[in-house]
Length: 499
Image 1: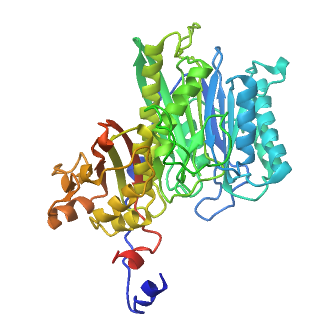
Image 2: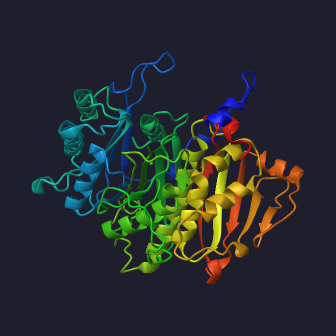
């Protein structure tokens, strides 16, 4: 490394490319696509510091379910051993409530992570303040049982205590709807404000909504997330233990629907709201499945946060009359339909995080096909997506497929890889004027690369790396996708351009 550094003369320059425009990624949400039965707001409570371009930065989001029906809640949390206080508290809330919650309180600017006992106390204070807000709106369901119905999330600086009094004071301004300071609303502007209150280093609020049908009934789903750096999440449900275990190549092969063993994985917060009626157990099952194929399949910088959390609420408010909740045991067909809609929606939200990656100039999909198991495909895609050599080559628009193969071949798998079966290609985006893929390796044999065509594809802002494992010698047909970006804000390119 030092030799490489000394080989760069004092007059050497590294061209820093500007990041692509992102204004088009934030657009107004049609009111018709917003789920029924929710109130939201984004407030400035004083966690974030004032800036000249943002005198009153939003740093507190509040969400209430106003449905007359029970509201199911599910979440996936970081597997980082240093789980932040809000992660600890929200996991406990879900476990004790049996998957029922009606409020979510989110602050940005301070992660409340590695803050000891005081951090846990502050997170519980946030949850209790959310419960008090529900009470003031006549929405508490389980007050008599003493069960907390509020989930909490935090993002920002680690190792600093929350200014909890400021947060509690701001929440109290939303108790009385007649108050001039009251801003809770079901309107699109309220969703936008809440999404802005999630933001830290994000360059735009990440917000999406859609309608979908199950058994002829129309439902709505809206969601927001945040994240631009410290992004490579691996999250599990409330019952998952903290801490990561290195994946073993000798571990038994996982079923195609089973999440891969923990590996190198990151701050990301997400919240999804739907007015579909879904049972708590099936909402958690659907979210766990969806997160594995979306938020657990993205990488910006390869680092996992202490706070990663994705929450989903399902309140059944699409129907005025109470109807049976969608459940994987009583109506598996409806459950699978909901699960797949949720997964597709979660993928859309997750992609926004990668597109906003700090300093990123490329949005790259990594598709691994014909693996023995889903876990194998996911591991390979993850290894490629986190390789500094691959990511710097993407920044340099260099079709250096040797780096892709190096990452593929060094990935621990359930079945040893046969190099003679592997193929690699670069695939243009679907909007490209020439969608023809460029094959660079076929069944282990290099293919003469058309340098001009390679420059065309890698010069685009969006494209895909496709790796076919050839069935791993056992006729495997499983596949997985990852989404990543280039390394542009780290000056690695000048150091590794000759590798």
